[in-house]
Length: 435
Image (cartoon, rainbow, N blue to C red; front, side, top):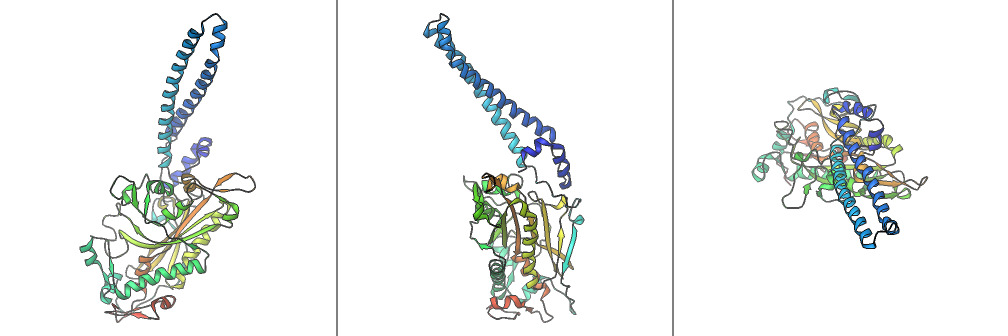
């Protein structure tokens, strides 16, 4: 949520900045709702003062010759009228506040100044590349065919069990998927200083509002039945970031930043992607990620984004997977993000780079929605934290990249050196490897 003080001071500047995201902020509506709320508050204060003054009038009326009972009756009549007016104003103020909250909860974060202009991914700016895509002296297969030849990647059975956009993995491919998860977690905890956390895979609506998925993106979520507003998590970002909701962290605990890493399944309806990436594991309803989340002081978040992105890059580099780093333009930037880098891994069967990690700085946008704060020792007052997160990495897409980039002419797949200890020393997967 944006800072309402900033909106009041210069709403036109905020509206101009939001246009970079393709969002038209209704300044007139904001000012109308804010004025209505302020007016209700002012009138309420005036009536409270009148009520206080009326309570003192009994003695004055008695001194003027009115009987005590008549004086009380007259004052009570006045007080009753004031109470009726106060109740009406209270309802008006609540309605204005609710309408204002509804408006602000739907307004995206303001992009950072350095975010490039642009309407969609075609305007994203490439920052760097790492590694050279391999050349093959045989016809390259995509991960679906490679996995089918090995025998451990089965979409037909998954479709029978559930439906489209699911996968069943067996044998060596299932072990490789698990090995990737363990490798990522061990690297981030052992080399990058993250604390591993285990979190619920089901969250309430307050958690989703805190990170920005609600109210605007409910159609992308899987909501559970029943009276409770429970949802399957779309990403570990939601439960992990909400660890700090309604909290005030002391400076001594915050230190140079709090860093969490979590491995979870993720569940997405993919409501807006009908017909896209219907083949294989690129876009699934259920997939797994290793998620990186950081909480830092405001002045640290720009540097923290570079560091966090570097942690995700380190996984790709150790797996020797070619990738590129791009800075998202305003039109491709997420709702809650002020700046995002995407890491895109090379997929030879598609002859292009595809997103495998998205690393974002949210500034104080999520923290304001969650009331996630730290106590500044210089002032002794609570201040909003800055939050960041990124995939380190999406496990399924990393598996896809390995199957395609490490495929051999005989149909086998070489195991990256970094993963071999997690595979019991196995150096390759071959057809029929279902052990």
